[in-house]
Length: 156
Image 1 (cartoon, rainbow, N blue to C red):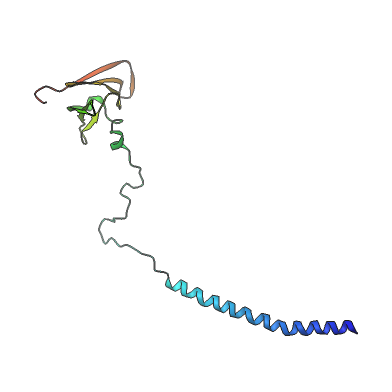
Image 2: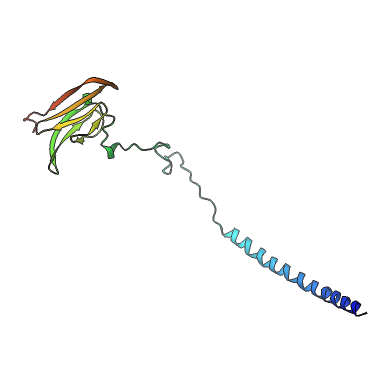
């Protein structure tokens, strides 16, 4: 009999506690549902751009190609000795440097040891620059040639 009283007491507690436990869950869920729609409504719309026939300023002008470091490296890796015109010779930081111009582009300064497409700068003096040509049209030469470019005193 004692066992039956304990079982009836447990069933009464469960029967009374069940509605209380289920009543709290919808209130919490309702509070969460109210917050979520407010956050979604405040999100700004995605921005769009209509060029209307003009050039798109946001378009990549290089088209995905990487910029060659021509300015930083001096742009000498593509220059052939035969294309060079000696424009002037200057003294910078105690060393002589030659100002050369190529058919396309701005003048470039070169100093001893700078590499070109088909050779390198051997020496720079106050009136001439000596280039050592080690290749001809991409083919290595058996015997390197020295090419001298001079600047006349009238041009100084």
